Length: 129
Image (cartoon, rainbow, N blue to C red; front, side):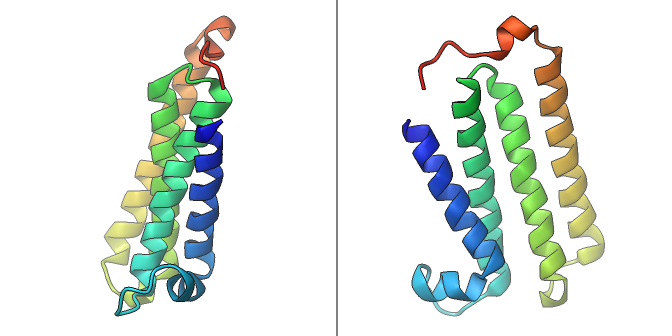
């Protein structure tokens, strides 16, 4: 149950940082100077952590590689979104954005593929939630 609670917390804070970075900074992360892109990147990584924990809880930990791949892919996709939103703030959008998005999509696809390759009996974990 702790994994589920932590997943909800990570996802909530991550989405908050992505959607309203200034409000997140003012309420939680008051470490001057304010940097929108940095706050949104923090949100992206929290979303990835929440995805890993949520998927691990939902599957009972049946396949760590599938869960880790999908969760890391979700985090990478959120990081790509952060770079799309902050494309005018610096970085190298022509390289950063496609790199994070392709990596994220590849990881999600690999995790889903691995999960689908397992027999139906193996898709449920024996770990107690």
